[in-house]
Image 1 (cartoon, helix red, strand yellow):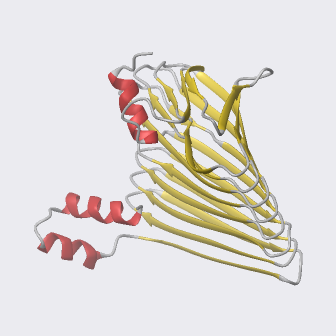
Image 2 (image 1 turned 30 degrees about the vertical axis):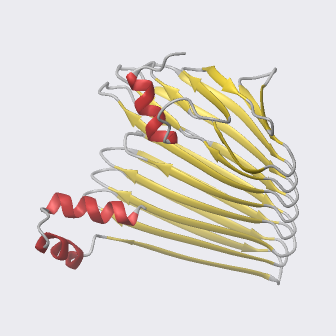
Length: 307
């Protein structure tokens, strides 16, 4: 398959790809898998009963990665995909996902990705998911990801969820179940502008002894955009959990942050902190004295904040 210039733009934005990657990968375009390759240790198998793939990582696999980006270029398309990740015992891998939508038409384009992770004993995963929208059409670019994570004894996952400019509406749902000595870190970075709306719902069930969960959210809301962030930690055992939400609000935007702690064990230690505020005036002044105009100074501050 030859990639168009728009395909290449989207793949670069959501997966930092400058061509066909090495190793295991699956590229989905406009509702169909168009390029797929397994490796010696990572097998990618199409599902038989519904759209999507199974990504199976062999036990003991180390220092390997798999790319599974989705791109959409047809206006009016609604795509739903179901992906299952099975990470074998003791494996250590990086998964690069994400979805980019180019909508030049007047109908809404929507991608709903349902991802299930089963992280076996002692395995470790770094998962990066970026969302991006572009195109001059009046149709919306809509992304609704659902992520369900099970981390078995001693497993660990770090999940980086990033929404770049251009996504009009999104509802992100993440639910995790952490067993003995397992750990999960979720990092969200989000920017909305115009009239965009974004909702994030995260629930982490700390089931096992000495399990841990951490949620770190940084967001910027500009113009008349709206954001809702809900994060719930449920401590069912001797466990530790922390939620941190830090947001910058600009223009007539609205942000609602709802951290929730549910201790169902006397040995659960759960904490949270949340802050919403404007860009500090002294930061702007300092950068402008260095030669930047106001817009350049704001962009520099926001880029550093969301890094």
